[in-house]
Amino acid sequence: MMAEEVLADIGPDRTLLLVDDDESFVKRLARAMERRGFIPETAESVAIGKAIAQSRPPAYAVVDLRLEDGNGLDVVEALRERRPDCRIVVLTGYGAIATAVAAVKIGATDYLSKPADANDVTNALLQKGEAMPAPPENPMSADRVRWEHIQRVYEMCERNVSETARRLSMHRRTLQRILAKRSPK
Figure 1 (tube, one colour):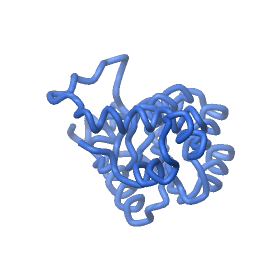
Figure 2 (cartoon, one colour; figure 1 turned 120 degrees about the vertical axis):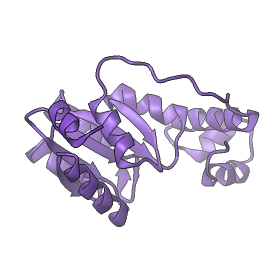
Figure 3 (cartoon, one colour; figure 1 turned 30 degrees about the horizontal axis):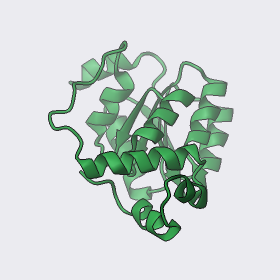
C-alpha cells in the first residue's frame, strides 16, 4: 500500500496503541506505523496498556498476548469496554488456534504470529469486511496438529499445567517441556 492509500483508509482518528514488552520491537513498530500515518503510543505492560485504554482509548491497537505482568487479552477487554469500535490486532510469538479463538471472542479484529512486520500489522488493522484469508498451501503436520490440540486443552484449563496434564493423560513434566518449545511447522 502506498502511504496516501493508507492515510485514506485510516480515517480521521489515527490513534494507535502498541502494547509489547519487547522494548526494541515496540519502538521499531511505532516508528514504522508513524510513517504509515498512525499516531502511535506505546506501553510495555498490561497495567500501562489498561491505563491508556481507560484514559484515552485509541481507534487502533496492537497487543502482544504474553506480557511480563500478565495476559494481553486483559488490555483487549479494557479497550472493548471503553471503545467498542477499536480495531485490535493481537500479536504473539506463541501462535495457537486456541489463543486465536480466545482473542477473537474477546473482541480482537485479527491475530498475527510473530514475526509480523509493519505491513502485516497495517493490513490486519485496515482490513475491510469479513474477507476470509486464503487457505494455507500446505496443511498442518501431524506434530503441529498435536501441538494445537495440547494448546487448546491448556487454554480450556485456564493455563493450569497440572489439570491439562491430567486431562491429556500425560506426565506434567512432559507437558511442561512441550509448552516451553515453539510450535512445530
